Length: 239
Image 1 (cartoon, rainbow, N blue to C red):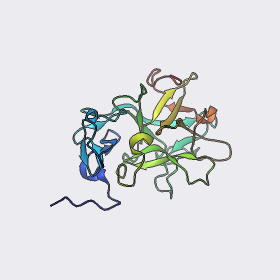
Image 2 (tube, one colour):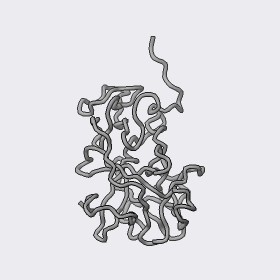
Image 3 (cartoon, rainbow, N blue to C red):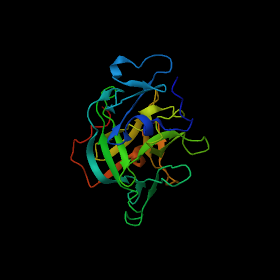
């Protein structure tokens, strides 16, 4: 008999493959109407192309290696509002990323990130997971807002255990992020979603939430890593 389909809100990640920042098994490919593309080296499960025993790369292929930790327990301090750091609001209603000037102790370490480089590249660009140091199953991701917000896109805390479920439309493109080093030694963080321009995380005047800019975000879209990482850890912006 045919295998019964999981409930609509079930997570494929929990059932079939790895779903954490060290190794994420969903390639973003679909096999609803045809087989998984051979180049992915993936298996089909309930319409999704997954890495049964490997990790998905930035190019949508399966790799027999884990993601590489490049920074651990770092803060992302905004360049324009330098007293403010990005932090995870896991328990909030919508989970939008926000900034705070509270100390890490007061903020219960919700402002610390572990950064992992995923294998492969997308059109020559390396990609990364920015994971919560406190909640390892949550990563920074970009999503469309409800339309009532100040920007059409925003940065959110994304639960990897639910990523790849039947209601997920973006696949890994909105959580495998581009991180680049600016001329001033800071970084920009963004997502290349579908055919849109890279959407860069930024803070703008009048709100401490983190939104997404489809154009050059300026100082509000640059971030200082604390502690600093070695120069050259990330590619230069604009390349």
